[in-house]
Length: 166
Ligand SMILES: [Ca+2]
Ligand SMILES: [Ca+2]
Image (cartoon, rainbow, N blue to C red; front, side):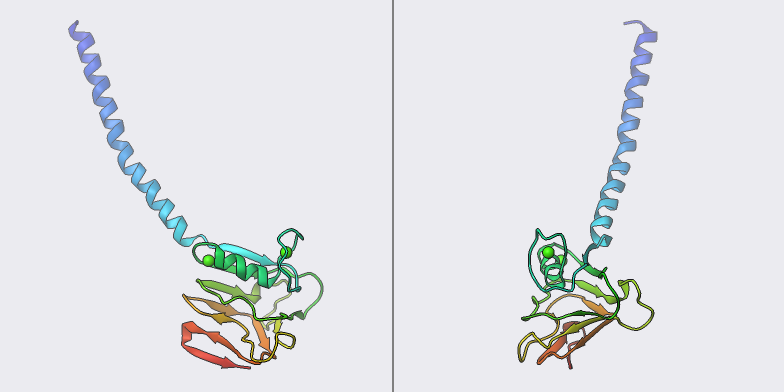
């Protein structure tokens, strides 16, 4: 091998090593970003029906479906509202809603038309006596911008270790 070839080979090797070295921190950064995304990206379920059914194929999402999906979906979730028609929007569950088992934010302020006062109402009139409104059994859950009324039981907010009676 000629010296010039040998030098070229050496240079190539050193360049490859350098680029391999450069890739290590990049790979770490990519991994960190992935982890960050997993932590910060909430899955948002949008309620666009005031009905109370569970039917994955009817093209609309009820609050009952949204809570069920959030419970099944790993990690923290949010429930937003995009209900058609005019305020107030009344959701009348015909039985207890699923216990909220993970971190969940139910945010009634996302309903279009919200202007400082809640316009989405969770009405327990038809839910059966002693039924709880929302049972936040676990995690860091938040309910905002909702009117919750006419339930025989409680709206339980485990985060505050308290019971709200309605
Ligand atoms: Ca549906
Ligand atoms: Ca979840």
